[in-house]
Image (cartoon, helix red, strand yellow):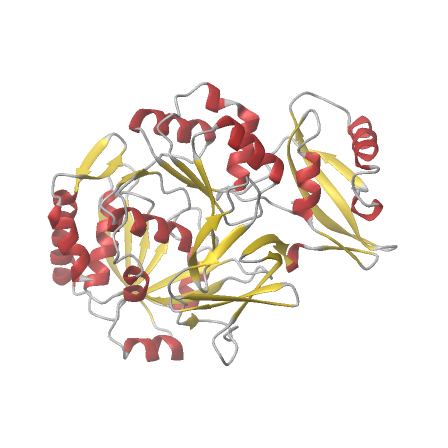
Length: 447
């Protein structure tokens, strides 16, 4: 990773971070990395030690991550809104050191916390003498999976420099997409703009104030942005590119965003914690078709399911068997359509609603309902039904008050002739609560 330190030194005066109105140059980053390296040495943190870091985006957190990687430690980042509780995470990966950053002044407290764990994958990885990274996925069953990566391999993907940009790292720092974003920005000597929270207003305010050029985000956030109309109240003209991923984008939302930002490039991204983030290219016709691949990645489709082979894949799960086949292919469980070199992601097989043996993709129904008057957001999911197996449920947020009975009649009338009968919601719920998680992803459940 020395090549990245050398790159930072090439442009010492360039802004690396704008954090809570504080400007931090790449020279400052190098000084902080050096300072944390000295602290680690003094504390006694050794190569191969498991170091849990509790914090969110800040120059200090990034520089500590880097110092730990240079020192050969195994980094376990957590945030206060992690998908997994601290106690559960430590039970999966164990711990040698615990470092917590204060929200008030970003000071790090280093404490020895020995939690022994006999994990064969970790023991084997330590023999490589490479820095490691452990992230957690909520998993389709709700049981968190600890995912081990070779940090050197993750960073190597960014050795080829790209055009520097001013960008907001939208996905959290304990998420593979968040790590990927912040490494991509800094490896190209761009500027990371952090926000206190990920609300629509805070993001728009930061874009206007700091002339942000790239916004990597989620379809749920863009749906909320269009519903709020805050893009009309803030000057977002600095944006050059909006990338979106982690869930299926409704075509209706994409159409609205393209109309609201006619000069901005829209890029659909695709990645999984197990294989990394693929290079992508959206088809220029404004559709959801995307070309996926790039150096180090191969793709194939088997029975309409996307499979990926990656040079940047995880080392493995700490608490689950490998899901790669004998040739290194990973089943994404994403159902796709294929048109030449392009894919259209229909949705995760685990999200599909089975109505009397017929498959319903939630994203398709959501896309249609979002086009209807007074509906600003919608989440579609399945609910057990003794007659059909599952019932299609639509939980909606409205712009103006409307009774659930009237809304249901209006939805059924609009759907008739536009959606096949089994796709029409049999139950409609008017919700006052957000339909997305703290990570700005759609919550498709009754909770």
